[in-house]
Each structure stands twice: as structure tokens, then as C-alpha cells.
Image (cartoon, rainbow, N blue to C red; front, side, top):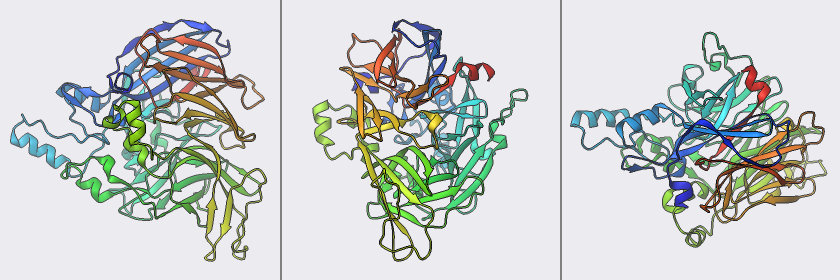
Length: 528
């Protein structure tokens, strides 16, 4: 585990050719950008948590049956400050940074005062997102860093707070067929009453001539008050249909008091999150055009969710699929003290780990004041999900379990907001790091897998073939690393229909495990 996940990555700043075995479809033209932690120690200091590592951006470019690879560390302000000091001096979610004891008392006091109200890191290590025609490394903070998708150079930092009242924003936006980007954020400090904010950035927001950020055209859709002002719900993603935003207000909460005092308690920000197993989970359904929320109070039992799969509308229902957990133990598993255990010890110490479960919730929209109490109002015939009206008029929702043991879900994005049949993801069994990827058939409730001994695949990404009619007509891409020193990293290309390997490109360079990414078709990249 140390050799795969804990070692520092290295840059490949110039493109290198990756020899191809098999045959890559001639229509596959474009670049797959990937993002994830790649630098875990600076000087003699180390991060405590895998999600704290400094961002490393990877690109896999497909052109005429060939593949080239390059990678660079995101040159964020955090990266520059840490490297210059030759130690970790910027706090991350699981690692609190303190002043260098060698500094004089005035320098140390200034650092302490700056941490009374924490300014978040700009180490954007989670995903690559698009606003207008600009691409950004992102995480769940108020900063994003624009990158050049060809050279991977860091162009510059943008602060959400300069354009919209937000302290935090997700790294998992949605895109519509007009190129608009929808996202969510949290306003905690300095922006009036605390609230969740949904916003939109138009597809034509980029201005290359004057180099103005796309966020200057951001449009606020609506704000949702916190259930608890001092303990807002944490959220990593959300759902979207043709007409609605689906926001899950879960009982996995950020304790604001603990956050504000973490530095002085010698605690980290990660420990400011808490799961309340006795609370409920609320579902908010917001009209994308008007910003108005559906009046019915939908809720379910306590759960934790990081990733939504898809959402759509059917016959007066909102259907949304997500990956849920029974508790918040997943985050703790990624502390290095846990990841560095031998496999047998890891399994034994985490035998109670809550496995990810892919679930479907169905919310009927035509509920009336006189709707029958105690009756399931879901009329769709292809799901066992229930929505039962309670005596007070609220609706208790019981999910339909689709599959167990899968994370990092992805779909044919042409079917986002639409009824769909297939999704792809990373199998999670004995470890939070996947060693298989899978294709799930929702209709048949069957799945197929790809795996190779001692190999660890990244999040699978579906790319549709040009003019595809069938949902699974395309390829699935995944970056693979191995614990076997005889097996070089490679880019795997699967036929999405059969889930069989049709090609692999062996990378003649070091590649690190990543998190999420974005595929840019060659035609779009050329226009940008």
C-alpha cells in the first residue's frame, strides 16, 4: 500500500508516447484529464490523510490510434508556499499545519491569529470541471485553479467569493446540452444567514480576449436555509433532471464551532464532521428555472452520500440514484495510519466498514393534501422504491437497492437527466481503493467486471462513439496502476458493450492513483 498510495508522484512535463497493444477505435480523439493527490510529503513533514496530498494533473491524449501521456503538479498557492518553506505550512482537511518552531515569536503569533478564521487551502485535488470554455482543477473550497488542458500549466486562481456569496462549492457540477454548468455551494461566514446556494454559469461565459473569468457571469438560482445554523449538512455532489435540482440534506454534518476552534484544539478539519445516526435525511427538489422548491417534505432514514449516479423524471416522479453508506467510516479509512496496514490487518480492523450501496429513490410530485395516508404513492412498475405519506403530510421514502459494493459511478453523460440503463464504477470490497471496475445493468440487475491481479483501476470514464444510438455504444477508459513492479502503468480501453479489453497503452512513466476527471473531445479542445 505504501508503494502505491503513499509515495510522492513525479512529473512528466513533456508528452511521452504510450505503446499500444490491441486497437484503439479511430473515432476516439480527445484528452482525458485526471486529478488526484500526488505529493504527500514536503521536506521532513508528511500529510496524515490521503485526501490531503497536493494535486497532480494527468492527461491521456488519444489521436489516430495513439496515446500520449503527461503530468504536472498543480502550481497552486498552497504548492508554492509549501515548496518554498520545504515543509507543510498550509492546513489541509486531515492535517493541521502549525508555525515553524524555529521562527521568532512575532511570526508564530501572526500565524496563530490568521487561523482564528481559517482561510481554506487552494489545493484543488478532486476533479477537473468546466465553466464556459475554461477548465479548472477543483475541490470543495472557495478557490479553483484554471489549467491549460493541453500543457497542464496552472493559469491562475479564481475565488468564488469574488463572484458569488460562497465559502465552499462542490467539485461535481452538472452540464446541460447548451453547455451551461450548474453547481452548489455553502455560505457559512460573512454572507448573511447561512444557506446552501445553487448557481449556474452560462456556456458562453468565457472571455479569452480580456482573460476575464467565466464566473463573472454566474447566476444564482436559489438559496436553501440550513436546518441547523451551526451544523450544516456536508455534500459532495447533487442530482439534476430536466427540470429539477435534487439536493440531499444528509445528517453527515460540519460542526462550525469545532471548525472555528480546531486550530487551537490541535485537531483537524476532518474531525469537525459528524454523522448523526438518529437524524433523518431530507430531499429537496428545486425547479431549475424558477428556483422554487417543491412544497412536499420528502425524507428518509439517516444515510451518508458522496456521489450521485443520475436523476430523471418519469410519469410525475423524480427518480434519483446515488451511492449511500450507513455511516461516515469511509473517510477515516483513508488516514495513512490505516492505509499502511497489511491487507489482512486492514480487513480485520475495518470489518465493520459500511459498504457503498447503489440505491434508487423515487419521489412522486403529484401529492395532494388529501393523499391517502400510509399508502405507497410510487406508481412506477420497474422499482421497489416506496414513498409513503405520513399523518403530517410529509413523505417517507424507502429506497430500492440496485447494487452493493461500488463507488465512483459514471454514466454515458448523454443520458444525464434522462432515464438510463447502465452505469459504471469501481468495485469496493475489502479496501476503499478499488481493484476491479464494473458495468451495472439496472434493468436486468446484473453486472460484469474487469480485473487484473495486483492492479488498481481509477474511476471508469465512458466515451460514446460518434452517432451512437444505443446507450452503451462506446468505450470505457481507466488509468491502471499496479503493485507488481513488473507491470507498468497503463491506460485501459474497454468495449463498453462487452466490457472486454480492446486495447491498452503502456505508460513509460510514473503514474499515481487519481480521483476524478473530464474527457475533452478533440473538436471541443480545438475550439477552446
